[in-house]
Each structure stands twice: as C-alpha cells, then as structure tokens.
Image (cartoon, rainbow over all chains, first blue to last red; front, side):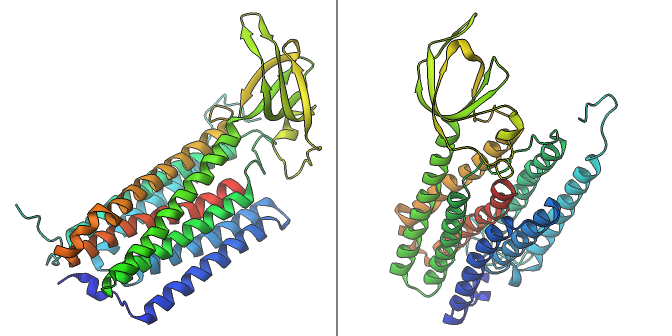
Length: 106
Length: 265
C-alpha cells in the first residue's frame, strides 16, 4: 500500500489546488504593487515583501507539497532543518554589527 | 535485486523510501540556499551608503517568470492528481505544460543574463561615468591604455551613485554616445565580477536556474521514455512523479523568495 492513498484526489482537492494557484498569483501582484508604495522607511517595504513571500511559500509547502497532511517522519526532518536554518539566520543577524577591529565601515 | 519500499510503506517511517530521501535532500537544499541568503544579507548590509543597487533588474520580466513558475507548479501537482485518477493522457498534457514553462523560464532568464553582459560601465578620465548598452565595440586595450572607440546607448553621470539607485535617480533619456579610447580609464560589464550585488545575483539565480534545468530534465525523462513504467508498475511511476513534483515545488518556493529580494527590494 502506498501512503499516497492519504492524499485526496477528488475534484474537491483539484478545486483546492486551483484556489491556491489563484492566491499565489494574487500574492505575486500584491508583492509588485507593494514594492512601489513609498512607506516611511525601506525596512517596512522589506517586511511587507517578506511577509507576502512567506505566505506564498507556506501555501506552496502546505498544499502543493502536501505538508499539511504529512507523516511525523517528514515533520521530524523539517524540524531539524528549521532549527538549523533559524540558527543560521540568527548568526547572520548577530554578525551584522560585529565588525573585526580596523574594519572600514564607511 | 529489487529495491525495497519503492511502493509499499516502510513500517518504521510510514513512508516509501524515495519520499524520505527527497525530503532529506530538500532539507539540505534549504541550508544551501539559506547560506546564500545569509551571504546576501551580509553583503547588502555591509555595502557603503548609496552603493547597493535598486532598480537594476527588469521587474515585468521577473514578474512574468514568477507567474510562469507558479503555473508550472500547479500543472505539476495536477499531473500527479491525473495519475492518481488513472488519467494518463491528462498527465501527459499537464507535464508537457510544465516542461514548456521550464523552457520559458530559462529563456527569459537567459535574456536577462545577456542584457547584463552587454551592459557596460566606463570610468572616464575626467572623473565621470558612462553607462549603457554596447552598440559598437572597437576598443582595444594594451599596456598604455585604450585605443579605438566604443558606441553605447546610455548616459553619462558625474557621481557613480546615480547609477546605483535607479529608483531614486531618474536616468536621463538614453542616447548613442561615442567614447574614444583616450577618454576611458576603465571599462567593465555588469557580469558577476561587477560588484557584490551582481556576484550574489548571478550566484543565487544561476544556482536556481541549474535546479530548474535539472528538474526539467528529470520531468522530461518521466514524461518521455520513463513513462513506460506506467504500463508495468503504475503505482511506482506515480510515486516517481510525486517525488519529482516535490523537487519542482521546492524550486518554485525558492524563486518566490528570490524574486522580491533581488528584483523589488
């Protein structure tokens, strides 16, 4: 028996995929539109763009990659990845202002 | 020798082996791209004030490529759904669209790359900067400097920073400019060597494009000669489509982040 049998393949699920597809297109248009808005600071533009990208990425992972209904084994693998990825980004942010002595920072 | 658990579920994982394998591979891919995103952040934050480019890339083309990849993602998942519903013809149709989308994506990306390689910046001896696309290149360089001439379609600026933030500095209308070798102190194109932005841009998008090409080769094989497996072992073939699809969705997911980071911010 394949665990594929866990995945619904009815017309209902196809409708779900199409809804996600439309959401991704709307998200893309929204990203471009938001990038042309002059928020008080560029940081707000960055946050808005990353929030939309994060939402779109979550939709792809949850529905197209079926992470919303996966086995515990996959979640365990991805939990480790999430921990290491968070650590990587934390180290990156930590390093932003940690210049070695004699660095020319302009 | 039979490969175990290609179709049946392995009791301890609850999955067939290829699925565990592809997720472990994707986990490593997250860290690979994560490291490059980390490099991007450090390069951007470390850039001198006014020297991080904005508006260098073609937003309509980037948007089109995003829509193309999203479309290829839905056709990939629908191809798998078609096999689950025992509709092999529909599977062929959906994955043919996926392959066309992959070709379109690589075609647009190649056009963008070409545009960067023919885009030149000249540092002039009078301290100004000439920037534009090469129209005619008759320049020669030797130990004494440049001889001959070049014609570019572009403009000349006093401060190099005007070339960096194209959103803030409205570039004057581009016109044909003839530059004699005697005027030129330095020349360079907008390839990966131009600055840290183009270096990380070509690294990130080049690595991503290699993933697109690799994924397209696998999907193309499964669409063509590999599809014979459907006749002998349809469930195993369906699993292969699911695995290649997971990789393809990941490629789409990476682009979802690359697009705003490189094109819009």
